[in-house]
Length: 452
Image (cartoon, rainbow, N blue to C red; front, side):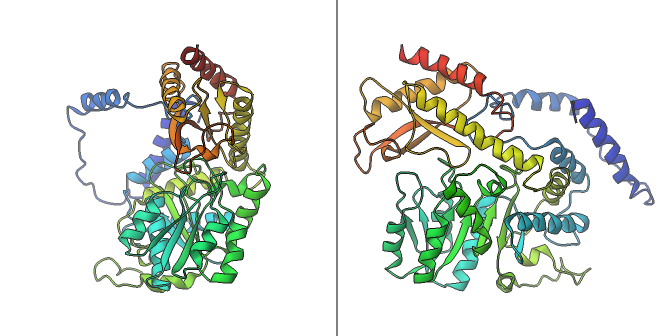
């Protein structure tokens, strides 16, 4: 799809093919767009100008990756039917496509057997994982790193399960000594290992967590909502690679195809290694399950109505870009980390910036701005100025407040509770590596303006 004209031409042809499948039905009234439709859509287009250019390579702020054109087209096509994947009656074809799409995710992770489904996003997928943990270990708590997504503490509150925050080390990964100290108390039923924290892209030390599991006996849930697709990357560091290689052994794993999977929002997924956990979902409904004896996705999900179009879009994208380690999809994942490593090297050589203690584990880079005062407060204020100056040059970054211990020991005073506001860049688009010189030139211009 090389142009918008090609995109809409292919979508029109596919829509005609879909409509032909219902040609035998008698004519039914169609809903008119209305006389004001054109003007309203023009207003929508104008209102949507009030966004950052999320799909452009000069947007390197938050983790926003544009959906692939095939996903956009398949989603739009499916929406003419508007299937609901809660039950086969509401989404026959899209439910079958969901099962196939989830099987591809399981195959990518090397799961020989599994139970899983798509969800509206990683938050709900994590909720299901921890809910099942609560069913298996009633009353026992959840533990996650202080760099894990805040949703885990919230979910634990919803489930009325105790939550324990585990300190991270200077690399942003879960500290194993701190974890063991918490495990000795004896009330932790599940440890959440984050494979790609949303702040800095850190990968928790899964091999060490498994060693502790042998001693203390707990479930392991991998929150790979952001980093899951890096299992396909060919350029991970040794520690990250070791963690992803153990994913087939975790009890449950979450991944968000609407991040690196090139999907529209919202599309998450939950996979359980033990299919028998489906027993916890068992229920009956007298009005949704009546036309098939086959397994309904609604019988293994806490969510009810879910957009079948999400499954169709993911299925189509997987057919175009299979999850093979030598394929285009995997190469693009690896390119993101290569861009992050390139960016990190440039930061390390730029005297006005402060690189963190360790190289990026995935494709997220964070960095502080060096101030003449040398304090976290001055550095934070300067970072905010650089953020604004970069945006004026159409380079869009992000700000993140992180512990000063993530930076070399001689950078700031290292009080345990001291934080600094940093700049943060997510190099997740396939074009980021090719655009690195342009990105760097604009960042240097912003630095020069703010530090002269």
